[in-house]
Image (cartoon, rainbow over the protein chains, first blue to last red):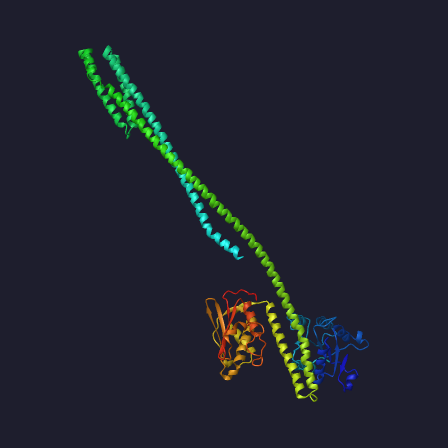
Length: 156
Length: 466
């Protein structure tokens, strides 16, 4: 399912996907997408439910066959997902020279030391623990989004 | 368990008696050996005496025989006036002298010696007279000599004296032998009774010691079995503990997501429906969010409590003042209100102890906040016989000392959530951290005046189980 910002015609016409949200919980996805939209952080966000779909998006295959390989400016990645979890997805993204440069931010409920260490070892760009308080949650999403979309300089 | 150890203690008390008995038996045996040796010596001495007396008697007999022969020769001369008899007589006298001197030597110090001397004396006198008879025989003829001989015959007394001598010697020997026999008899009984006593003691003491050993071995065996079963139980317990902790961890973890959703959707609802919702419904939503937030804090606290039990401790010598300062840096507190005195050093895990201080200090700050500018918090420490004591004293609202033991249990609070925010797990975390350091926690309070919370660390670090 794709969420697009309504009333933005540019978004429909294949404007670049700025954020790939990889999240299996619909509720968490809804809260994240709402915040991204409300705070005007990204024009176009694609939401996939697990790592397999994420890789399909990044390579233009499977569900996304017929489309060019996705190159979002940011990947928001959850850890615990079915079929292929966050760490494996991260590995694939970071070991593929074509996608290695894409910033990946892990957003997850887990603060397990082991997960942290593994993620950084695989080259995650940032690791965020999702707060329970929605206000704080929205604040974190905004900060992360603003940072990677606006402050951070990326190659064209 | 107590029964077995009580029995062992009792036996340990009996052991010195058994050993004493054994020692006594050995002593008796030693005494018996000494007595036997002395008896042996005495028997030897008695035999020597018998031999000696035999020799004396045989010499005395020979001596008497010689003296008799001398007399026969003399009498023969008085009859035949044959001078050859006198020569023979003198030869016999020579042998008698030798024998006499030997006898004298043998009987030196003897009681019977008196008789021997008497006999020797008489013999000397007879010989003098015999010589006189011989002279008379040559000068005046045999009848004159015979007349002298008949007048004073001093031969019989010699024989009698010798007989007395022999008799006395024999009696002496008999006395000696008799007393030796009596001693032997007495010794015999002593030996028998000591022997029996020693044997009995040996048997009893030996038996006691053997029993003791058997019981000791049995106790050791039981001990080993107990240790094995305890180890098995401990392993099982550790396994169960680990399972429990990983369970509580994953449960807390999985509870977070739906909580986030509850909070999030309540807030999103409140934002989106602000215009159409009246004040009450909006308040309900607010309550939903606040309860979700509270639950989130509880889960966070449970998670950190469970994490504490699993983390490896890295123990090192610590400057406690430095640890306290890092803890203070984590808290929003006006440093001025908190006085940190000199604190003794200790060994422990810096991160864990910092967490403990954070909890203690944030409590002190929280509960003395009502005092405003008059709030005073003091951190102090000292060493005593049992360990190092650290304390945080505040002049806040305090607590009722009667409920002090509930303080360190999970989720126990002595004030309501409305009065003071919190989940009641902070002190449980402190308790667990200090317990893992092998220490103890304590608290004193006076309602309305203030409280002192503290912990004691042992001098010798040893990791404790919760």
